[in-house]
Length: 476
Image (cartoon, rainbow, N blue to C red; front, side, top):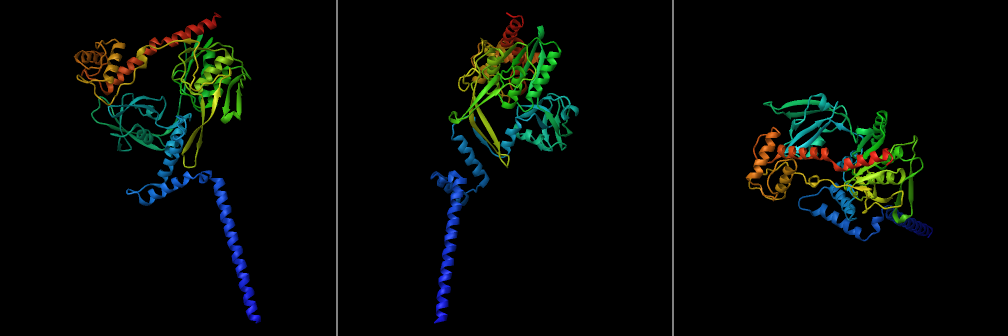
């Protein structure tokens, strides 16, 4: 009986232990589930089951197989795209790294600007002192291969990817040059190449012109150096050219603004979701600025370029000349992830010192000046041939370009006829090109280049900005 009693007690004890273990496991499971739900809120959404089901079915049954990371990156891209916000996006892997590099004040590579022409990659220029320049690579050289890999049929992105790399590594470029019968190889050592975003020159009457092409990491320092050099040359007034500036880093924009706006004056206000959080940025100027300022703006001045224009107008008395700006007044934060991917998300909106909104509104100039009609012509295709018998918009664009630079093709009707061909031949002879009477690669590039030169020489917006600034200098 004692033995039976002991066995019963042992059995009961085991049942208690098992019950405790089951309760512990259940509690642990529930706690883990609760933690997962709190850690990953999307698990609470019934629609997540659809996402999970889709993923599992594709990985299990898709005929051609699938890469799990590509599926997950695709889902992240889809989430960002579903916001229907043109400024929010998800960049996967290498795309993310390239996005971040846009804001660097340097890149690692060989130091050339390249254009695509007739399916080939033609050197536009080599940066002074860069590896390509030191090796004698010239304008109009054609890059036919990189490290023995032909670039025929490759994209510009692939060419750039192959020429960039780690500092100190070597890359062999195969060059074809006019006048030489055979291509030749040049081996270069990759270096850090500074990215220039500020260009300065002294115009007549002590007017210092500074163009900012975008706001990158080093733009503030570049601007400070440019302004100091102009002041040393006797600058009496600053003409700041922000045309076609797409914006960039707010930190660099604040640096530039603080150089020109009196200390403690408002540069901008940033308003976050539901207006629960507002941040006001003011000038941290350390040295007073006493020169009048005129700012050039146009339809392609956007984002932080608009912030700077409005801040200089409201807090530094600057005059704005040109055309109404683009109207992008929302702020994106980008978050680099461990694998290099980036989530770019709209999180706040800019408000000008005077309390105005920029987004979908833009900044109006004090003096509106339009550019000539030819300034808005689209680019010509460089990988197609326009010839007698060609029809369409590209032909009409070419006719209007020829007319603008002084070669009469007849009435621009979008019909490439003998008169158009004759005008093209005259242009080609003047440019020392083979007079084929057709437009493709090099002829298209030269025609667009002539148009840019004409616009630079005529530039009515710049002339009005100079006139306005001259009046401010003279106190008129």
